[in-house]
Image (cartoon, rainbow, N blue to C red; front, side, top):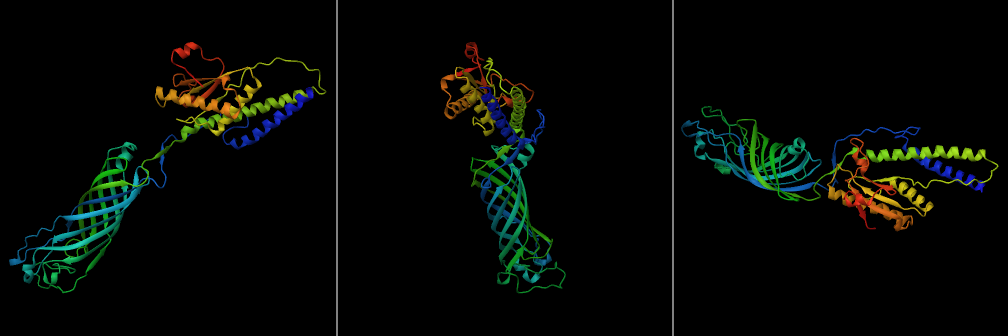
Length: 451
């Protein structure tokens, strides 16, 4: 009989050694001795999304006005300036993606006709005074900044946002027309002198297409209409080389200002997932505690083996009464979850083994939730689901009779752990015996679960 005990102890120690061997992978968190390790973490919230999410397309229309060379009335050598600003229609299309809640990009195309009053410095062309015309198109890569998300905190349901943007691209202008000879716009493609200087040049030929590399800057005012649609109003300015309108008189930079409105359509998932590594510190601490418990068991096992070896050859068997106190473990959960983590299976297994070794005992399975998240009603439902999940594991996986399990839900009414800011330790299911009197259930702090 004693030989059986000896070999049983050896088997127990071998199992503990195997468990301890797998625990060595956790040495980054624990010391060689049984101890409690202090953890630090970054408490900032990180945002991320699938690469398919947060894409959008835009369609827009509005008006644009060129800021180009100003002309002169030539009749009688008058230097009265001709108005160089005329509003015309313009159209835009774009697509892009928000890479973070703060920064995004878009590719944008723009098309429209441009009218302006061209410089005319020739007395002979006095009858040619008046507007000139061209068509223009541009494409650009623009980077956008959600100012409200950056300065006011990320809010995925925010109704109004201001979004500055800046970019660079390419442009083309063509179909130049005017009231001069052969339809050529006055002053096209040559530098004109002011009246009074007769050393002037003008020709019959001019470029039919002008290519430029414009820069873009502007503000977008966005209004959320729904999950997939936004309305936006946009003010933008484009800056071109002086040859943009085929006229090189005056300033070296031509500009185009636009006022546009349109709609933004989301074509993927919209929103951001969050991650805060401090939410997982309690789980790491629980793993650390399990490793420390295993090391303590291993030390006790070694002492038992040494004591049994000292008794060889085996003396007479002496019956000794043992206390049937169960292993009061807990099963921890992540926030807002009733799913059992793989790291918690060992605690449910240990409870099942104790129930098999003590067939006349029953236990309380008590579900809990932490007080810092959720409300009272929601936390009560969450603690019920957690208690039922653990009971199902004992019954379905380990064959424990459900009549031996008394299920209770505390919600966040009772908090077994009150260790400063570590209230998340209460996201657990506890195994207890005879803890709850009928008065506690009647008072509403604890709810009995029919299982």
